[in-house]
Image (tube, one colour):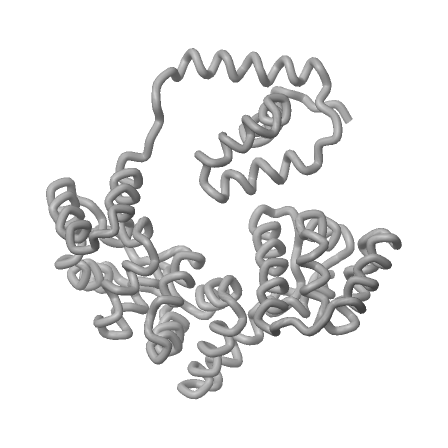
Length: 336
């Protein structure tokens, strides 16, 4: 079907433009984009087999026009400064400068936390009360929270995640207390109405994006504290085994983004229903090759297999977030 240029999204137009510019130019552009922007544009590029000449002309003309209208340099000054300072490696200096900057310009500590290196955030928080750590991390994106948890002491992780699961809404007063706890580190205040931050859903989102070994360790710790909450979390989590519940169209979209070697490794310990689902959605020749590779595959570390499985789960979660697939696994509502 012929594409209507006037109805294409910006990401779609960018995808066609990059296809016209070639692989080397695209690689340089991708270096400057955020991960989510690369994934979004790439999702359009993967489905393209032919770029009509008139469409190529339209996207190139709009690019030239836009370049003339918006000549100059676009930057996120706050993010640029935070990333540049963090990259110096001098944590004391970074903390001091960030404290002065945020005090002077009314910076928001919780936003600054979101732009700091996970290892540094963990260092700032590890001596705080677990409830304070939980409140702070519950305001962050799941990926960032998971990375920070990785650098926290192991005996603190489960306690913090359990507390996140117990949070539902946070009042302005509590947000104020969080800001005060961070004041000596990075300064600033946030004034907002009640925040939806923690809860079991937040914990599921965090744990699903972490390595299985770390995820299981945290879940075991939560189970020791509160078996009921742990059970709620487990019931909502989407796992590699839940891939068998995804419809064929969704599975095909997932598998298009998985390398053969990753898929082979992931299937090393996969249950038969998952193998059957995957083999049903790839060509017979590809299935035969993977079967042969599995038979020839010697002993491998379980952690490597779990890492491969988790990478596929992350692809599934991203595609669901983008609205490209519907998942009915874990605690998802049953489709009818």
